[in-house]
Image 1 (cartoon, rainbow over the protein chains, first blue to last red):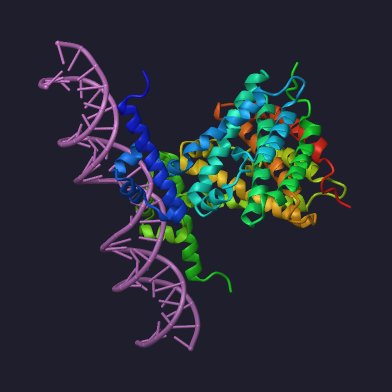
Image 2: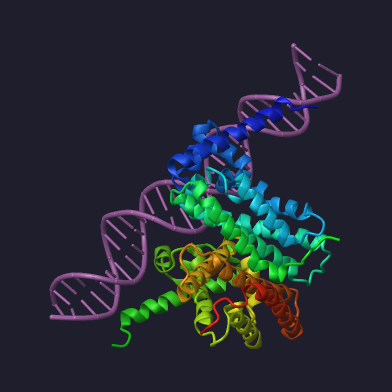
Length: 211
Length: 211
DNA sequence: CCATAAAATTGGTGTCACTGCAATTTGGGT
DNA sequence: ACCCAAATTGCAGTGACACCAATTTTATGG
């Protein structure tokens, strides 16, 4: 019932390829590594690489989809009496406290960012992930609040909240890339987050308040 | 002093390539047309195509960059006493009146949208254009209002306004694609625009008011 | 333990966007 | 007519990815 030999080998191969690829990307930059090179280093054929990862970008993104579902969880787990915007404000502040990687507040995000910034293909991929997040959250919002398909509010609320989160991430990352320590960034980041959500709350304040 | 033979031929060649390419894209879809095919149809070499357009997507986007600068103009030409958000509200409403192509409110936008939607490469390209718009408007805002580089407000305001515009475009386009007539969409679109900007105004209302 | 099905891996061949370069054509100024 | 610079071309790559036909591995029922 557990995991057969077959399943285990598959997982191992997949992980080996992803790990080796990531190592090469970090060492040489995404665009300077060919899939053939990854395959050779992982001791498999190019076809096998494409068997596990449908594009070269997937080789890098892999775990990124995990962050896509996070906003939906925040929405669903908001407290009674709490509006949607407030729930996200709380979550972002909490993410700052815990240096959550889903918002790019963790150590190592700068390395990640440097690689991404150096590759147009990866930049494009990140935009795609962001759009995906927006779509998923929009659906969840419309679902949760029973909006009909003509109502733009779920789309607007999702977009504005995620845009806010994205800009806060950018802010933190850019200061990280400038070589600053987290301790020096954190208080400003917190203040920026408060201000950013203050811009949203007067307009979206009551949206989706529970009960 | 006018335009020499050389310049004229260059312009003609460029236009011929772009026109023929667009014709092929409309007939067969972006992904089903190769650059070699475009070159053959335009009676030039593949290298010449790449001499004028640095990527295949540029062959399709070409005039898209004109829409990038529009928001900056709206910002700069806002009336005295008018806030930034109000200026954009006015511009969007005006664009609905005139079926402006820069917001995708014109006839023919549906054809354009159908081609784009069918091609991942073009969808990615449109995302890029949107981000470009955001960057340009952000710079203009920061510039105009003398914000220091640490101030997130220009970024937030630019992003929220352009997001709003984008969703209104999507709304209009999706109903177009469903086969509806403009006359039946227009009043709803206008109402949606009012509501969308109503969400923004309480928070961003006074930002950048003149004088 | 073995035959055999099913899945994983491979090699090969091809397409297409795009690059770099060297050779050639063409328009403009003298 | 002559020369330079820009425009155009051909040619030879490279790298991501698709498609397909072997071939190897693992799982399974007898």
